[in-house]
Amino acid sequence: MGCGKSTLGRKLARRLNLCFIDLDKYIEERNFRTIPAIFSEEGEEGFREREKKALEEIADFENLVVATGGGAPCFFGNMDLMNRTGVTLYIAPPVEILVERLLKSKNERPLIKGKSREELICFIDENLQKRAPFYEKASVIIRDKHNLEADDILPHLGKHE
Image 1 (tube, rainbow, N blue to C red):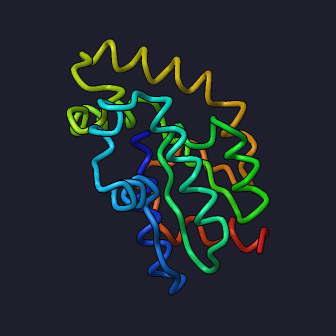
Image 2 (cartoon, rainbow, N blue to C red):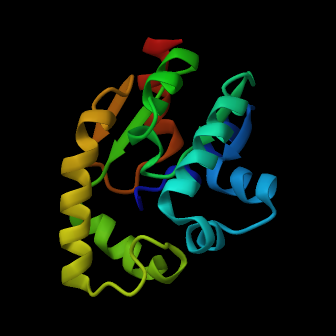
């Protein structure tokens, strides 16, 4: 959450001349509702079910870059599915960078809406601890990079093609 998956994914897809899918946007288009609306009407569990179904659908696609939400790898064996069907990338910027980015968009994100800076820092720390076992299964891990660009990722991907 907030590490730049969608922005970097778009740039990486463009650089590799591949299609790009933002999983959250895909879910919204398939369900004719926004992510906040799905959370509001069905809760996180309902959203995660829809997220799993969307991942299963796009797992059959080829030649694309997919940006998932930060929680996607942590439910229903999603990370194993992603690792079986492609190269996964965990982008791990410093926590302070995540805080600054998320403060700018917190009202659009159901899990952090209304949190103060201190609450957001606690939320990020707790979630990174919970999610780490899933994130660490990624094929490629890039830590503590600020202003990461698509060209910074390309050398890491070559090892996994």
